[in-house]
Length: 152
Image 1: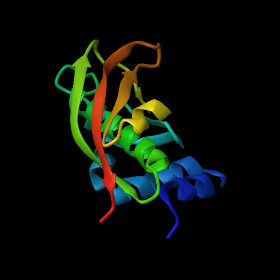
Image 2 (image 1 turned 90 degrees about the horizontal axis):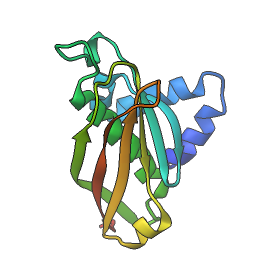
Image 3 (image 1 turned 120 degrees about the vertical axis):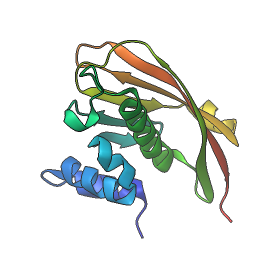
Image 4 (image 1 turned 30 degrees about the vertical axis):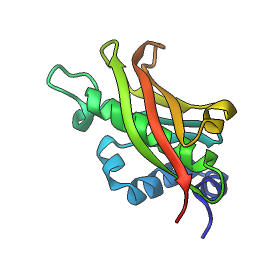
């Protein structure tokens, strides 16, 4: 079975490939479908998705709900982790520390980033995450903590 990164590279080379991969990704992790995740980028040390502002992701004041933003951040982290985790290892999220900085009044681009040094610190790997509006305002930022251990 191909790795998630191999599948991403193969599918996104096709017309409408990112849309198709986004659907496949949401089928593998169905909870992400609730935020209508649109995969933008997947490569080692970088994952990026868009959470669209739509009725199902809005809160009572009409902005993208903070938990929908966190859902997007976790999806971006998952793409990064799948692309970066060394062979023979597996990753598990341990926790998430985030700050809500501003209203999310547009679609959100959710980005997860790491460095080689972050992964060298395994088994505890910090992943920097942020959600940004279309005008560049950071609305949510923080760290997702991974536990990276050998596969059993």
